[in-house]
Length: 224
Image (cartoon, rainbow, N blue to C red):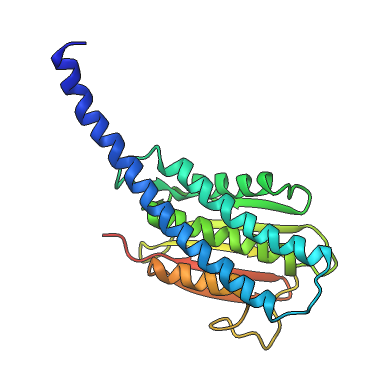
């Protein structure tokens, strides 16, 4: 190998190291968040009944597994991207939801309807955060949307609103939230995480519910 070849490889190696470093940094942050959430979930279990059924334990473990799958999916995507490059939110949400369903063997329990006809470019941080929110909404819907156990349908929409801001709507076809539910403070760990994640990217979060289902609308900040 000539000296010229070596000099060519050095910048490439540095660029690859920067990509790996950024991906590892972001994943490390989410792993720390995951650890906190599992601790909070453990605290919630400690305050519950002395004995949990198999179904209840299975649901708890599936929620944890869903978070781990989401972080793994993020790392696979981020590791191949140059630092600062925008990501197509549409493609990633489709990829993320399909990966979660496959990894947790949820085929037949949940279906995804993508109404994503418009390209929505977003930063890596925004995309990975919305993907984690999507995972939480999917897991909550499996547990609560249809008390009778019917399969859940999740609809995902993405578009630019009149102000030029990217808006993402995620909704289910379930029975809706209780009439007394406070969308600003109510719910368990899943709802708490959804609000926390939305705030971390300065996104406006609106939650609406009726007898036709529950809808989460995330509006990202104005693009520079």
